[in-house]
Length: 205
Image (cartoon, rainbow, N blue to C red; front, side):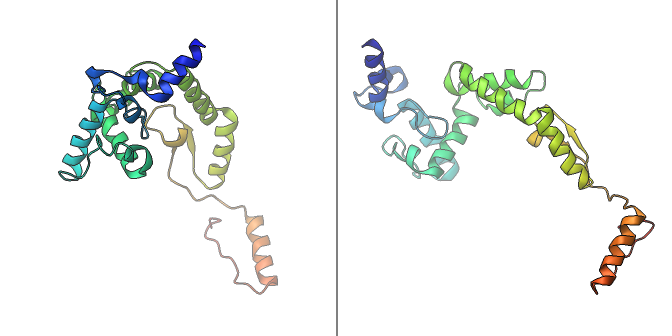
């Protein structure tokens, strides 16, 4: 019964009654909880987000205190409020300065951004992040990707820093030397099918 009561409070929003954060009316908790890509919460944050977005997109463009529903139903508003919060809304300031730190591990930086967004930790989210990271950097995943890229003349180096896209750093494609026997067979096939013959310069096509 207690678990049901607590769950009902969170579903109704009554658990989010907090005048310090702007939720002073009985229905403010329901209005200003968990909307948008980063679950914007508290009336004061909706007011701050309105001011921040109006600075960026023109005075009077947004009134999220009254149009709070747009944060969850309008994808543009959802994305813009999330971007605003990531850069300006967190108590830690710009979270890019946290996630980009090079003197800490990626996991420590990730956990810090979680606290910056949520105000506390979230072990299940860290577990999901680790699962994704292990898949990207796993030997099978990287090995298969490396073989495909190698066939295209691109060398791939496994990289575990934040700035590496998709977990690998790619070098410039290099033309591969084609064995003469393959060139001979390809030329023969082209001749037999009345196609234009293949030409090679020093064995490189």
